[in-house]
Length: 393
Image (tube, rainbow, N blue to C red):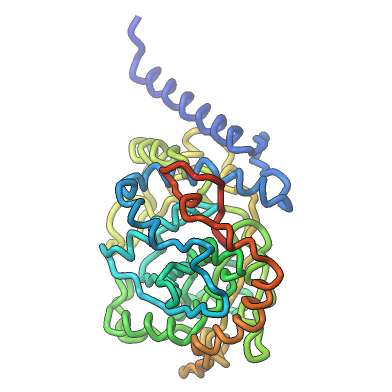
């Protein structure tokens, strides 16, 4: 007996519904009638395991870098190549379609959570060590999400102020160090350099003459603030970074625990195909193109059509949010109370000097584990001797 088209559709919906539930359970979530519950939020190993499926999927999709791995791994230092008292970091802006861009993507695949490509305007950096020309870490900055409650409350924004001034905020969507430098607490160094005047000026030079896609505004790429979130709950890297008696990274609260990483293990494409066939995109500005507004809209509408709880959008992993003011009057400027930015002086060399004396040299004396690191253990597609995790934050 041949099934009717309606029966075929019901069968495919039921199959995808079961696949969503099974995927969540396999990742480590507890599936309840009205939502999902992650494991112990204080256990970073458990939270890291939640992301494993999405990370593995990201690595599979990055497989085109596999033939280049023997060359990319040469830019990762062995422990014997690092002399802490000779470390001399410098920033290199990553250009599109370059070898540096390949290295940036390759390193991002090692992160303990899947790394996005950033939104809208973007700028990326490698942090290299002049003593051996090896990689210390990476910085990726892009446009921030529109709504982030704890950030907006810290600024004291109303809707109009946020709409007018959000372009003066950047989000650090990836930020951290690689081994063996991560063993020397260089995650803090990379975080400090992201807040440097050098990085800010590079972004402003890049975008000062470019018009924004939606607003059409041009010529004002001033950066007043950077935001970022911890990868796994509370961050130990951003905390207590003080420069010139100022706390560089100010904790302002936690995210609401919503997002899409738990659908980023290959399942998202199926949800997207399903939504394209069965759901209508929300109307949006024609300059944004056609289709759905965002991945979150795809997931929200798919869940509704599959008759699954809308709370499945909330993975429950609450990440700590930090703001990094880059001016004396950051909040007043972002609210529109003042039109001129009084930027702080945060020179890269001065930041490194602070890091070197406060963290690098004392750490090198206390802990010499960095000396044992061999780049082969960092291979993704080779046969690593030991699993190392980036100093992701």
